[in-house]
Length: 232
Ligand code: SF4
Image (cartoon, rainbow, N blue to C red; front, side, top):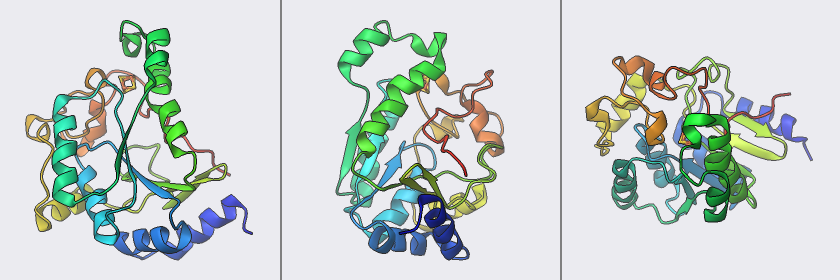
């Protein structure tokens, strides 16, 4: 059996030149059958990956991380998109109540220590939810940040794989896909939010091309920690 690093490299090579739907189809049916989940924030561009997944198999589990700090618009958009796309298995995951009461009783940890807040509300709940899955898929794209610019289509963190089927897509590709498939837009996009996460850590941005600048604005932080996979 291939080591995880070799398997990730082999799959990335195999997927080179394939379209996103073909990549997802292979991952869902051949590489990780019944062992893959899609993780979605139901944010500004999430509809693209979810639509691609639903076109392959709408019964694949979708994990939605509700940090208890999300915009109400995102919660309502999740319901709307789930219905629109016919997603059959959306699972809401999040921090445990007891952990929140112990570690962030006032709900202000994001202001004092955002890394710890992301650990409590995102990284640990996602880690628990991913147990039992061999691979999770994301909608990250290389153009979004310097950290993501070298991202492979298939990565691994230990024995867990991560699939990035639209890694090479541009903002134009995303806009074209929204338009071609008449996908509903997150209601906050029209208000100038082009990358949408938790309420305390998301700001409007002037320039749509630099959407991620609206996340943890004014801080060095650019990632919540769920995507910092080990590289060989
Ligand atoms: S994005 Fe902000 S509010 Fe959300 S978990 Fe991270 S620090 Fe906390």
